[in-house]
Length: 380
Ligand SMILES: [Zn+2]
Image (tube, rainbow, N blue to C red; front, side, top):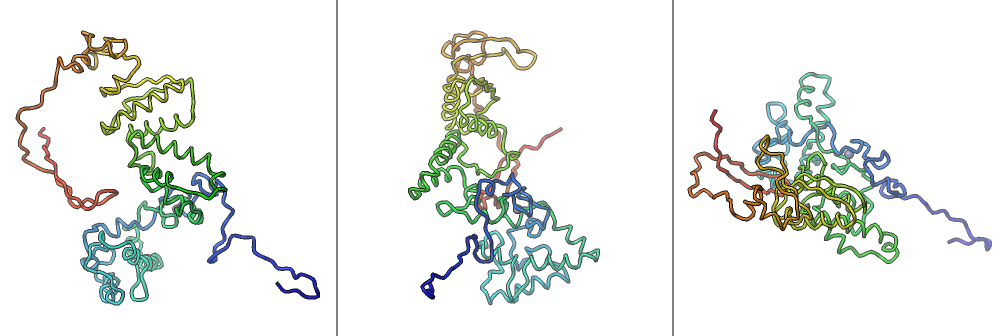
């Protein structure tokens, strides 16, 4: 500090969050909420997807290499010049032109889009095509590669990009919601915060921990928090709703569930039962329609409606505590549970004659696997 005539000089410091040419807003809860216009990504308005160049249409077969024309729009007499530029110059920056696209590193894949001084990437290519869009053939070309695809700005996280700069334990909210719940739980369990941060975040961390524990408790370990609800199975949706109810500590309510164990690994059924009992213990009534033995046995009161399916049923054949069920004569359920009736395993299995083969499946946790299953064509 400069001191002149014994008077302290005035100095101004910026009180704005600025770095690398970006101005950051003061973080608030809305910043992390894509359902709020403030936090939603400006490009896709919080949807996570936009109508844009779809990488799956540009590179329809990821088993091919650049050399083998994996990039569909860089084929043909005129456009192959773009591909040739990359093939010819690849040795300058060590790009594996003979490697399948699916085996490229994330950086190498990104390079296909961004390009470098040696070759124009796909982004440049499509910018060029768009600039020529007054000609019909280029418009046709654009429409071939356009589709609903992940938003470039937010990478599908639906949040404005500056929200991703706020990190907790080295991770941004975008990274956290793309982690499977099992891993996420581990992350929060390991998280150590400075004393002050801990005192501010303590309550919410407890909540987060509880919710994640319940979700993983009922076998949803593999889900990511950013999964769209429309892509969940009925069983998954019901179980997620259950965790919400448990978190809200609602009492004196009635829950009616239709086969919540559907899609559940048998090993997780006991955990589902524990969650249902927890709901009951909070002072709620839980009515479950279920065929799963373990869930039936755990009920406080069991109602068997039968004796057969459809119009042959509709009568109450048993209504009591589950331990009395074996004695219920008219109940088919009881007969199967006691083993009086059985579904026999076939002694001889048919030999499959045809197979349905899925080759080199690559998605989520499938890493280039080939499976085949026997397939019986329908005969009409
Ligand atoms: Zn976006």
